[in-house]
Image (cartoon, rainbow, N blue to C red; front, side):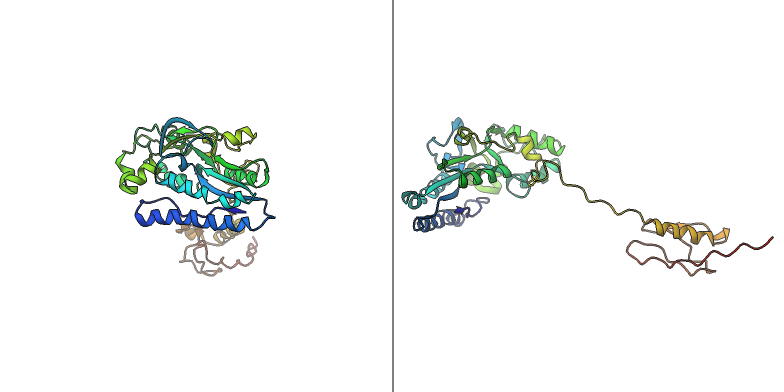
Length: 319
């Protein structure tokens, strides 16, 4: 059984928001753990967790699964979240808590919020840029969940982060290089406080956590994207295509029959009317003033029906 439910932590930490974050994680997890305990045939109970357990600011301290918990709202929530799995553990079911880092995917999360700013040339480091960022690529996170389900030797908390954390300055420089945009405008410290409030900015935007995946490294786990550059430039599903980027859609080939038709039509016109004007669509058209052997031809605009084919070319007069 895999349990991933939980309200998003993005936004201001109001009283209502904090209540939603807490109740959407702890109560459903406890009920599912009790349900799992009543099913002796269940082999594994895997739940989501977060590195927020270690607190918002641990400096340069190396954090592993054996490190003590930190302080703050998110640390309290995650501690109660993991304690809610106790009924399943007491029933003898192998239980795994996946402590997830900052997931890198263009479909959501941090990367989705920052990419438009950096593409517009408005990206920059946050404050002094010394905060540690424990990140993880999306496909690597899926591999960790798969291992948590299948590896019978894995139980308890597992740090789902890449083996190389980076500082905010390095993350900013890497994202700007991948998008080929400058990143020279640092974000002042009061910026996140205006959007998230004091508590939200301290717990999310300004958090500094040097977290390592000690248990995964000890188990010989292989990461698909161990370096940040590959994770930021990577699109989910590239592994299915052998690491190749998706093919670009082909453009429709030019309609050679239509252009040949226009040449034939112009050949029937007298020299005074062979001047060709261009329409808005960029296709040649026969002047509307000519009404002769051919019918009046409308401009060949994209999306309109093709003009009728002309008749046979008249035979030359005998000399």
